[in-house]
Length: 442
Image (cartoon, rainbow, N blue to C red; front, side, top):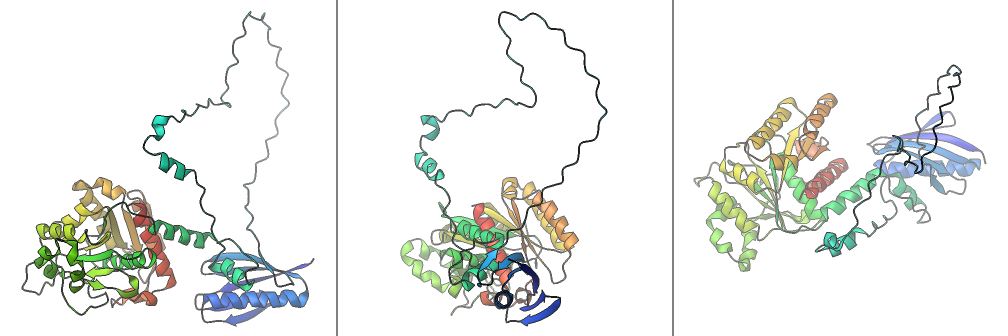
């Protein structure tokens, strides 16, 4: 059957252009998802009208896809061919003169073993598994033999759009982007064997520590469930409380510290609601920092230790938003208690340089192992600088376990209360990967 070709480009604002039969067709929709459906409907209509297969290549903000639309309306995904590197032709050589025949020696009574050439490397046999190797870990070893559960059909991207359009007749597998999303969700939902603490740090302010702390808490709450606390541990007045949903009280960490003896027993856990601020559908709590303008004293190292020891009994996971002074007792306490450090930076020269200086400080203080297990979050400013971002990634990629990028988001840049539904889908997905990277180190 003959095949016609078309191409489509979908923009983030939901508009699309389709190149077909030498002309351009403009399509408009509310968003990228609706635009995908309109492009797919256009392709099915043309395939039916011409009674020919239509091969259409579609580019949208998530990538490029190739589909084959049949006159019947069925849609097939066309795999991208993998190009093999071209093989160089052997150079033409002069005809070699025949070598003289070697002198044959009489055979010995016992033949020597043939030598092993370089093209036949010696393969050392793997040591046999013994009872001692599995002692104490038989259940773990048995679980490791289980194959990974197969993933269900795609729900996102073009594969998901095609699956829905087919009414369930097609079950295309998820693409790379959706596969990564599913892997991140599995990582976040992984069980923790005990309480864990995560500290968000950079000796410079205004680099995304507070928003990263909040959005990591929201991601944990939405994907994993509750029992998560985001704690503003700023040595002065932090802004985590200002950017969170408000409660019917204005109590802070200092107020909780004054009443800490009340929470020596789990029977008083319900009273915590008078000090923390529940975050609604995000399913986590916020503990605001002390107010610098208050007559109350700031929290010192001993106070941090008391608060942390108590709060860890009520929360499986504590996320600590730190201040900017490495010599502050609160900063020292957070770093010492942290199971994973998250080093936040902007794609700006001063922010990245201070993040690197923060790592130097951690190394000097004996936290080299924590640096090696750390996650670096690079937030994009409104004006991107790709060359500098690559420099930042290259440097920190050599120092920490993982580097994750976060796109610019106007909602976060406004500095107001963070509303999950006002974030771009790209930001929500980025913090899914941030949170997964953190969990992988716990």
